[in-house]
View 1 (spheres, helix red, strand yellow):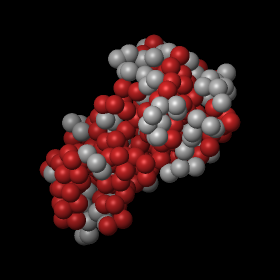
View 2 (tube, rainbow, N blue to C red; view 1 turned 30 degrees about the vertical axis):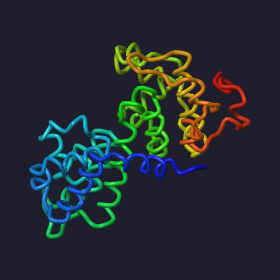
View 3 (tube, rainbow, N blue to C red; view 1 turned 180 degrees about the horizontal axis):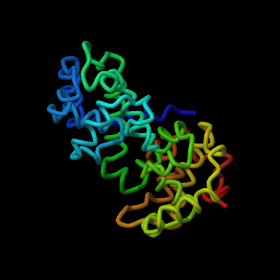
View 4 (cartoon, rainbow, N blue to C red; view 1 turned 30 degrees about the horizontal axis):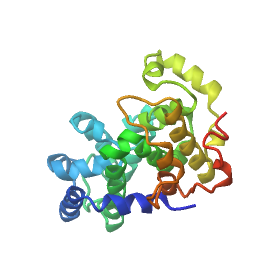
Length: 262
């Protein structure tokens, strides 16, 4: 299977704004030794939050501080008790701060962590660009990147992008589904979702492809669904959308665009 992360990064790094943000982060990160230091560096914080899929909480300083200054291995910590896998991954990355009340003698921004954050940030920027957001491709790429780490229904439901992909693939309208009481959502998902069947790279890839195909059946406004030509090949462009997931129009499992959907 083609490496989706590599594909996303290749596209992301062509964006000049992303390049500038990454360069500024790489310069600043080694000197950031505390949670307060990161919170005070707006541009670096945006890169870190973007890398972990947490851009939506960028204005919630108290929440971010709790995640950075509490020991994520403690059952009393916000990250651990929330059941939110994304929050926990973020807190785990900065556990040296969490275990020491928000500071450490050495910065947690090692060369490996900086490299990981910049790579994930570039991927997220590519996934969230206007074109990929409108077509659903960004969600599909995110799904292939993140779904493998989900081990529980609570983990799935705590991630709005992963949940949207699953809702859509099951034939639900995300807006209508989201209007249901949370307990109702859980009951429906328990009866419809078998995580053991969305766990291997191949299963995850095929699920993402089904999501893109379902957008052709039930387009979601204001998103602009990609054309069937784009999704399944046949255009003059050598790289159809599905090639980002290691697929091609000649794949036997997709000889018909809707095969395997139902």
